[in-house]
Amino acid sequence: MPTLISISCIIPCLNEQDNLNALLPELLAMLQAQNCAYEILVVDDGSTDATPQTMRHWTSLHPQIIYLRLSRNFGKEAALTAGLEAAQGQVVVCLDADMQHPPSLIPAMLDRWREGVQMIYAVRATREDETLFKRVGTRVFYKLMRTSNGLHVPENAGDFRLMDRAVVDALLRLPERDRFMKGLFAWVGFEAEAISYTPPERLYGSSRFKPIKLFRFAVDGLTAFTTWPLRLLSIMGLVLSMLSFAYGLYIVLSSWMFGDPVRGWPTLITVVLFFAGVNLISIGVVGEYVARIFTEVKGRPVYLLRDRQGRGLSDSEAS
Image (cartoon, rainbow, N blue to C red):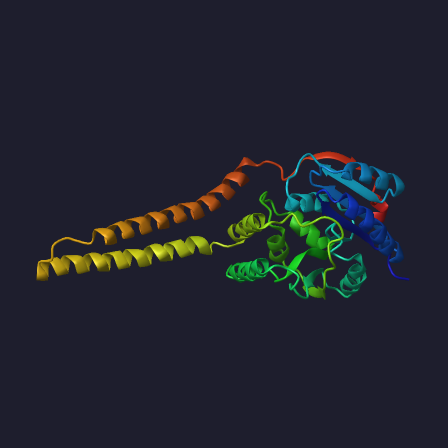
């Protein structure tokens, strides 16, 4: 007889009242069919719609559902962290509330876990449904992320994944407060395997990841897991210094050999403005890394919990 396992499903959400009403019945039916102990953790990242009232209804009907309400909007990475810290299952699944991460894929992930794979992550089969800007930006981002030593962030993989308890415990040991979860998933290692899927259309609402927010997210990831921007500035400074020295030598020799008067006012202004721009960019890049240090040394918690409802797994079911 197969050993009864316990599963925790983490759903971070922000103003997803309608999607939750569609997702939770489907997820509950799938979990009940697996003949396992389970809990569903819905982490509310500061919703302003009727999500709290909706979840009060669901937790009263199903004690396996836990509702974690954060005190404000801390961001999806913080919401995932809150769910990971509260999850008790031997297996932990992360999925979005927008119905683009189909629960029907979880049994296939469980099959791979039973065969010894410790992390199974879903990879989009295609990005043709996205804008050209997002497709190009995503491709560039993952290429830049590969420049870090030994870290490989799988391309087209999101937060939809199944993890063994050993992976979750390793993630919880990481102390950083500015958390880029895609990078952390890759950093902890373990035996990982991709599973391809085609995400369905979002059922209700629209994505909140606009271009500016995506750019900020990419900068957070690059500064959290790579140092090549700083090395690039060092190389740029060395090259520009050598070019400046060569040009200055040319001016001196030209004046000494041919007696040319000092001229080139437009060239001088152009060079000055160019170097001023390089300096400002350099300060900005260094400032990103300093800002991360500033965030870490303050030691503030990743999130604050306002309310918790539901029972979830009991201690005997989780073990």
